[in-house]
Picture (spheres, rainbow, N blue to C red):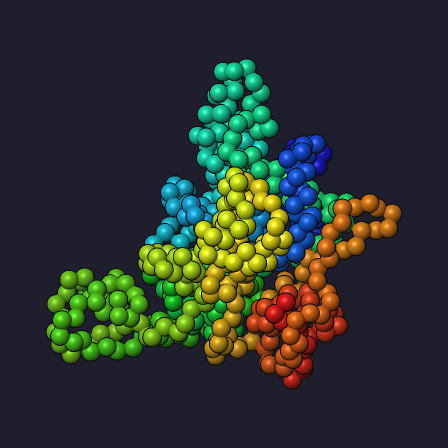
Length: 523
């Protein structure tokens, strides 16, 4: 956008607050040059052939996008950077690659540590929405300075590493060749990566030019960081806030155990409208209630480490709860305080924990999310390597089974646990899961992206419309007290947009207990 780069961060922030739609706010800060380049066109064509992918990705982005845009804008950076998680992870907070990259911004362990992202048995800061966003922007700013303000080189370096880009810049200088991104000999994935970002930026900037229409994402904070004052059981925190446990983990994917990290960070991200309720309820808890502590009488041969393993916790937690040392001698029938039995965790949380625990079988089946296409790969070849059927691979990625793949393309492999998309697939409801969710959740997620028909006067590329024709097994769902469209859609594994259309609901329709909703599942 002309003039956007010259604005100060304060000016852009003040202007951004005037928008009601965060996507419109993003467009006002786009600053990267959009050039006529075949590589961008190829990536754009792929997106236009897969509108369902765009819809799913922007739906997942809705809770996080306001925060990310605000952080980018506050620093005065090009707002195209807020689109980068689309390319990195499709806004899947539990995305995990073969290179061990994790989270929305896909940090590998070493780079995460380099930029201050803590990683231990309890917590992985690479999946912390707030901390990882700040770390990613720190890294991108550093890269931009390294490459004299060339943002395309900075983005390329974010993908393949600064030294890989620096070597090619040096080689081109020595050969008297241009040193811009388009003239560097970079890895195939990186050569596609930057055009992919620019292609998605085009779609976000002017969707109508391509026969698309994106519903508004409210330009207001979806979540706020709330102090917990120490470690707390995640199920307890969910009950205090009135959220389903899976929804609490979706905002706090860095915590991959039954409780937050005893050594911090001591905060949770919560929807704005439940934050005060959580704070008030937290004040009423005793220390034992925070962690659901129970009593355990030691047996012959017990050690602190053995007891910790038995109760799914760490020796440090047993030490802290009982004021003992790691090598303390435990007499038989000594009463110890231990964490209560942990209720089942959402599948994606279990998969994240398994990565830390090194359970290879679970790594292969439930933690496998992303495959980066190599030169010459086909869906059939990838199916043989990964064990995921061709039809499932095609379905997960909006492809035809015979469709050609491009090097560097990222494929969603899904998981055997059925957690292919965020929010996580709900299992058996717990008491906390049935607790009243807030209208805030409904408000932010009920507004889904949709693919519109091109105007008759336009010759826009043909794009498939989001599915509206009922197909699959018809089911009837009876609304319970506290249900939201978001929760119902998640449980039935359908989109909020379709659930709304099938039942002729308005954007602000309030659900009533006993109301019957129709859905078509197994699509």
